Amino acid sequence: MVMTTFFSVQSDTSVVSDLRAWSEEQLIAAAKTGRRAPFGELCERHGTKVFRVIHRIMRNREDAEDAAQDCFLNAFVHLKDFDGRSQFATWLTRIAINAAFMKLRKNRGAREVPIDELNPSHEPVAQREFQYDAPDPEESCSLRERKRIVKSAISGLRPRTRNVVELIHLQEHSIRDTAQILGISTGAVKSRMFHAKIALHRMPLLQGVARSNRLSAR
Image (tube, rainbow, N blue to C red):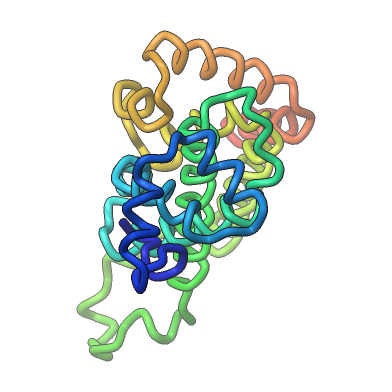
């Protein structure tokens, strides 16, 4: 599907036809030796599911296609690390989720623009009086720092719990959607969220933020 141009052998249709008869184990073993055509067949078999998982996270087709390309490229590079203890589809889905979040982080960084560019129409200040309700610079700085600390704390979670927290709290997916994206039950999502909250509560970084919030509320 999305990685055809990178890994399939379009010039030899007989080779492609033969690969379609191979088992997944055969394709993986051949791809581990560096052969691109077998990996291209794996991409064809799993491409639709990978794209669906990524698109649910990113909600933008073009970005999802880019992230899917990154996913398959990373999978090809790290295929030697696949030991077969989990299903190939499960292993590939984890890479897809990581690729989607990496793309989202890159996009957020690219969208940061100088404050002077936020008003391209150069409207008079009188027409933008709503900005007076915004927090003062000190409060804004404090808020940004707290968000940075929270994100840093989340990044320190174990991957299986971190993915759940990012999907639910950073990407605002429902528990059901999160379960579908990760390929687990809603009960497993709730369980991972429970353990994530305990782990976050114990982190010194967030304990400092909590103390700061209590002081500012007095």
